[in-house]
Amino acid sequence: NDAPIASGDAVLEAIDEDENNPPGDIIGDLFSDSYDDTIDAVTGGSAANVFAGIAVISDESDAEEGAWQYSTDFGSAWNDLPLVTDFNAFLLSSSTYLRFNPAEHWNGTPGSLTSYLVDDSQGSITTGTTDDVSTDTDTGGITQYSSTSVILSTEIIPVNDTPVVSDIPDQEIAEGGNFIVIDLDDYFISDVETAAEDIIWSYSGNDVLDILIDQITHVATITAGIDWNGSETLTFTAT
Image (cartoon, rainbow, N blue to C red; front, side, top):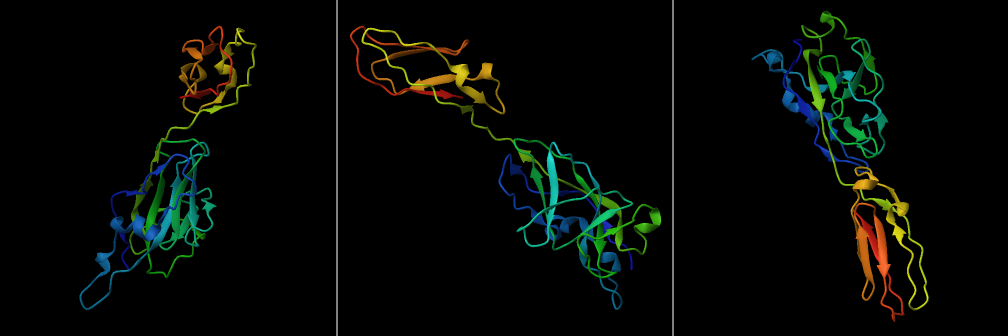
C-alpha cells in the first residue's frame, strides 16, 4: 500500500447565525476533492484504495464560538467532537456527517479542523475510535494515513437580531389633561447588536394625537387637543 495523497483545503457550506439544527454534510463529500490514491492504481496489479474517512488531529474552535459535531445516523443525533491531538486522533468514517453548531448569537469564522485522510487498505473506519499518528512513521509511506493534513473551515453568517421590548402601560386622562411623558428606554430590554443609546424609536397608530420622540433621550411626548376625547392605540417600535 501507498498512503493516499491529501491536497488543498475543505470547506463546509456557510450557515446563518442562530440557524436551528444545521444539516452539516457527509465526510465523503467534504473531502472528496482533497483525496487521491491513484498512486496505488497499477495496470495489471493493485487498485486505488477507497476513501475511508478522516483522522482529526486538531480542533481550533472554542466554546464561545460553538462546537464541531458528528452524526452517525444521518443527522438525527449529534455529538460534540472530543479533545483531539495527533497522539489521540479521532477517526470519522466517510459516511459520518459533520457540522459546526454555533453558539447562540455568535457569527464569524470558527476555529478549523485539521485531519489526515485515510484509505481503506486496513479496512473500514469505525467512527469514534482513536489512533496515535504523532510520529513521521505513523503517516505517509505504506500507512493508510496521508502524510499531509487537510484543513476544514466554515463560516457563520451574521443576521440581524430583533430588539426585545416590553409593553408600555396604558394611560387615561380627563379631557383637556396631559399625558405622562414616556421614557422609552425603560421599556427596552435588549438587542444583541445594538446598545440602548443607539436604538431608533418610531411610532404608529395615532390619528388625532400628536407624538414627538426625542431620538437623543428617547422620551416620547403625547399631546391631545384641548377638547379631545376618545381612545387611540399607539405602537412604539425599536430598531
